[in-house]
Length: 618
Image (cartoon, rainbow, N blue to C red; front, side):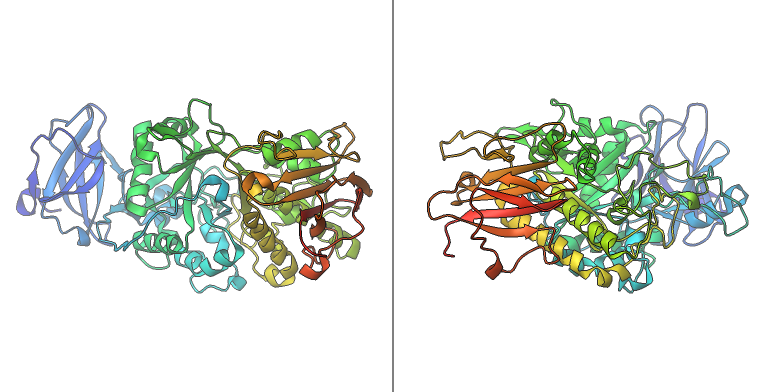
């Protein structure tokens, strides 16, 4: 090991303030680290790719502030070096590292490994963002697509060259654009530990090592995951991907799990780093959800979307002279639970379902979803009554016990035509429950073409065909994919389905009828009895400047039900736009007009109809 005096010029003069980690300055690289009182610290420098310490440089004896020690290494050729810290007798990788190398080897070989195998790297390379601008899509205009970078393109039939990587995800950008989404929300993409030391299946020295596939745990929060890069530069590859999505008007949001021990200051520094350095549009914060509530009041994040499971009324959005900025959103399983129960025909759920379709708080958005990464896929939701997590190695004791699912008569895969037909109809109903509700709909990757996880509702450790999105289903369920795509387009075409404010269920502008009204077998009477599973929802589009009404008729009963048709204005006629009981659920334009609809309409079992009343010729 070389002595520091021979090679490195150190500036250890006291500074009043410094950012944690490695920061590039005019004279060199400044390193700042927290050191517990009573311990000595030193900077360890390595040649890139080597675990041999080339130099050990002690930090000054006096801290900058509190327990923070800092020094500047002048003229350090950072492109050829990596670093760690020695704190006391322990080798520590910088928690603020912008790049981490050797991590996978360190994890696999566990405590036997040389402590110097994992090192921090520098990421000071310039990146040309060009004229990149944030799409800044309002919550009510967004259609979110939730995915895992690795499992989205790992499968053989994914149709991409760089499987399981940021570049592979970018290859699928045209597909996502065609589907109609304008937001992607990525499961953790920072450097997390893939090997769960507490797994019951962990056996060192064998191939039977359980992976932490999802990444909701402690991590190096400032560094993109190198295993998700097709090349050696994960930083540049991730930026290139974000830039490509922005060019297509698609926002990029990230999931972050912060431990309870993580300081709020570090969370602030982490998220601001991703906004500044990677142009990220928003975050879904897990773990330290109080952080989201604190950050929501900061002007620094006024244009950044912040999602957590709950926002108190006084902790949502930052107000300026022009009023409150609605950048926060709530995401919890309330919509999922209520809509799943009405979908399978539970009694006593009609009022909750009606509330979920119109819920649209004034101060924050809501993220609606029927499936999530934690739980059944949409295909499994209609194929399994019970979870099947045996392959996780925990005797099927992990995962949620209450899935509110229904297998349509057969557990698992079925060749029965009647079962397949019913499952397809139920999936269509689920998609419409999502797309016809106010707020922001979130679609789980692969649900649009029937992706299955074999009934596993907690595949946190399955880096294999169980979790990987099965692109072979796209061709087999092409009809359902087209239905999902058209449903997204339908939502976008009818502004009354995605309003910036909640519907009042009142005729507050004297336009002839309320903005939203409920109907049963009697017009203008919403029958919310306990055993009712059918309802009509009439949207008056005059409130958005269109001379027509949109009528959505829901029947979740196993038998045919009758719903009243409100009387239309003179010269207006009913046209059928969607019928989930039909194989072709979106009728052709020439088949839309329904001349025999006057006073009421019979709705087939487990079916959603969408009608429009407009002044058009027959």
